[in-house]
Length: 138
Image 1: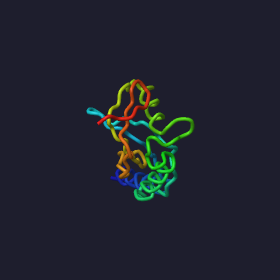
Image 2 (image 1 turned 180 degrees about the vertical axis):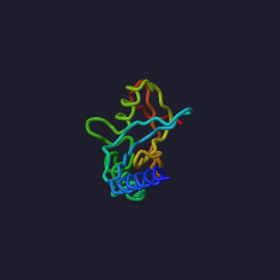
Image 3 (image 1 turned 45 degrees about the vertical axis):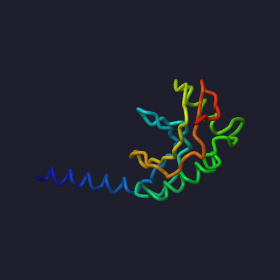
Image 4 (image 1 turned 30 degrees about the vertical axis):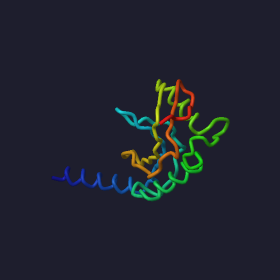
């Protein structure tokens, strides 16, 4: 019986310490395929207060995604390329050679949990042909 009490006390201390740790928040962009969600871009992690701060994580990711991609405008410039070209290059490096009429979606992930939708979608569909961004034809 004392071992059970000792184990419960130890678990309580661990749980308390875990809730006091700062949370981790990841932001990323995904494209949907028939069989999977494919990550096309991951932003640097952002700091949040703790692992219960869903709104804080979501709002910071919305802000970061909007700033990095000009509100997911795929034809906007991002460095030397367009946002869409950066995505096509990344997809090509992972053997996704063709993407047609696919929207990019924003997601956030907290403390190792599931990815959750930010409510953000690209302004245009993405089309990639052998790693090169193309204008989509409906």
